[in-house]
Image 1 (cartoon, rainbow, N blue to C red):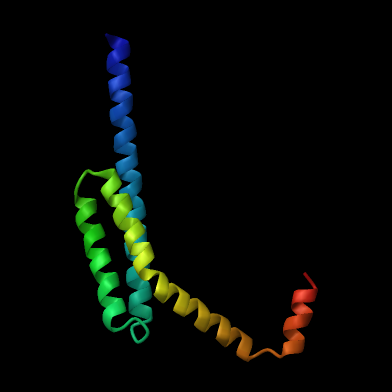
Image 2 (cartoon, rainbow, N blue to C red):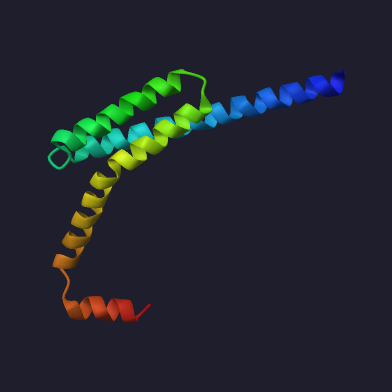
Length: 113
C-alpha cells in the first residue's frame, strides 16, 4: 500500500512540476514578447500586432488553468504567431550591421573563421 501511495504521489509531483515549468516558461515568453512589442511599436502594427496580442491573451488564460498541454500549445502558438516579427527584426539588424561594412571587411571576417 505504501508503494502504491508513493507512486501516486510521484505522479502528482511530476504533473505539478510540469505545470510549474510550463507556467514559468509562459511568463518568460510573455515578458519578452511585451518588451519586444513595446520597443518595436512602429514595426509591430496592424494585423501582426493584433495576432500576437491575441496569442498572448490565450496563453495568459491557459496559464490560469491546470492543463499542462494547453499551456504548452499556447506557448507554441505564440512562438509561431510572433515569428514574422522576429524575422523582420533580425533582417533589420543584419541589414543595419552590414550597411556600415564593406564587402572586403565581410569577406575577410568570414575567411578568418
